[in-house]
Image (cartoon, rainbow, N blue to C red; front, side, top):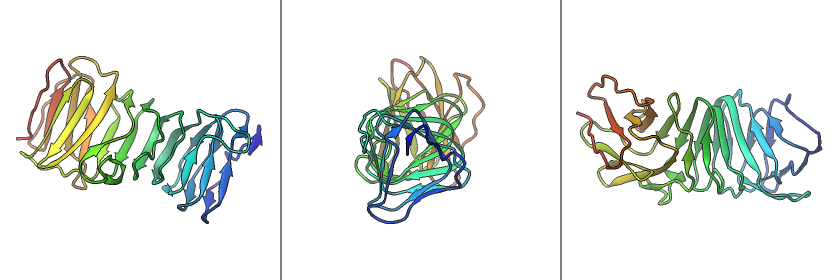
Length: 239
């Protein structure tokens, strides 16, 4: 895809074979596509462009997304702005970060979100599978900092079991640490205000859902716990 080209009206970009390539490095500015599917061994080259996803159907991409391409360039990025989940399962190396404007992004591999930060810029959900963590299990950390996390957003730790009285969390020096037994997930959150409140609860599938309440303390039942950001770690358990 070069110059001012666009495939914004496409129903799906599908890279069905190992070695298949989708190269948008030659585009002049942002590129818009609807759904994306692709197998391991396929490759998307961004150059320095932003690839916008307006997901209308659930989709999954298992190949690699990187800067470069036939036209070269660096700083490629992804923008998610759809209504259905996009699942990324490749070890991606693009350097411009991910912006979540709306919809759902699921990370299924370590490095799936590239090498820069993930930024919430609207109401969106970020799902992190065990494979997205540094230890490739129920413990570990993401390779990306998370910025802009605010009321209306959600982070789902799908592989970390939520259980009342056992799941607990602390926030200290920018790190939100959520644990259950020997399993621990660490999220690096940027731009968190003092005394900002977080809620952890069951995601409905056995995992842990993290949301933010904009500092407003609300009534909680035994299926919830709340922590606040401060200069000291707080460790509050579900009752």
